[in-house]
Length: 339
Ligand SMILES: [Zn+2]
Image 1 (cartoon, helix red, strand yellow):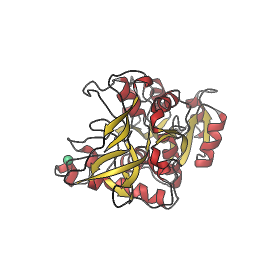
Image 2 (cartoon, rainbow, N blue to C red):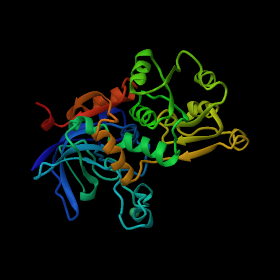
Image 3 (cartoon, rainbow, N blue to C red):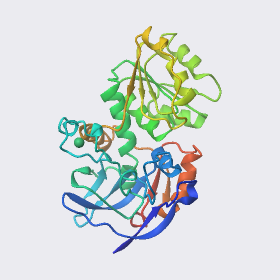
Image 4 (cartoon, rainbow, N blue to C red):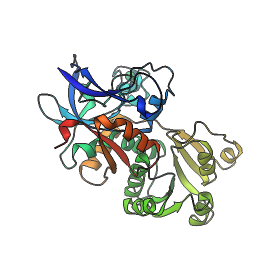
């Protein structure tokens, strides 16, 4: 049987993404075949396509955020995007995301830009029908990343203040909701008034337009000079350097990406003399995935879908995400999910 998929054979701009007819994969031992209904984009997909991971060799079929139904049974599932060995000390201790053999769909093996995908059976997690599968596809990477960063790594507590920069991103919209639901005071930055208003509706207590004013000044004003307890940064570069100046004494910076610029220049003095910490955060454990799915299933948290595109128009979807037009997630829908 063949199927539709979107792949690229050379790194480059969005036009390298081509719809193709491919042989449908078959599940082996310990695996299941998932009929993909929707697959969300991540900045990771853009970086893979641009060739920022030199150890990947094309052809590549991107897509780490998959929702669909198990072939045969029709059971609705989302895919836990951390494919791990299941046998190493990290896996056995429930830290699958630290597995040395960790693989991601769309990076290390064929991803979700297709009508079908084979995944390890234990990674296909049943989900309730309180959300449709396009909404579920908008969940895995950003909600797992935000949950692990805030709860698992930063240990964000009730009553603490957190700064979430560029909060209109998929990750930001997840983090604002998680922090707010957990009883933290949330300061969110974004680039225009309509995004700020939407962040307020997601639970941000203070919003700052970083195009109109220096956000570090605004944070000092909001916190009466004390600074914040936690900063969640996924941007890297100069924005990260400015975020660090917003940390109070004993503050924790959680870094979980560099979607704006690679690296950052960090001075040490602001860390040691105010006892600040830097925490790295990458995806999250299966337990954390199940915890955050439960809060999405019961409506405490909601995925934010900005735009949907048919699978075959993946290039257009990449251009849209790359142009930073999105508020929340951009999702590709497979033909079976369309009327
Ligand atoms: Zn392992």
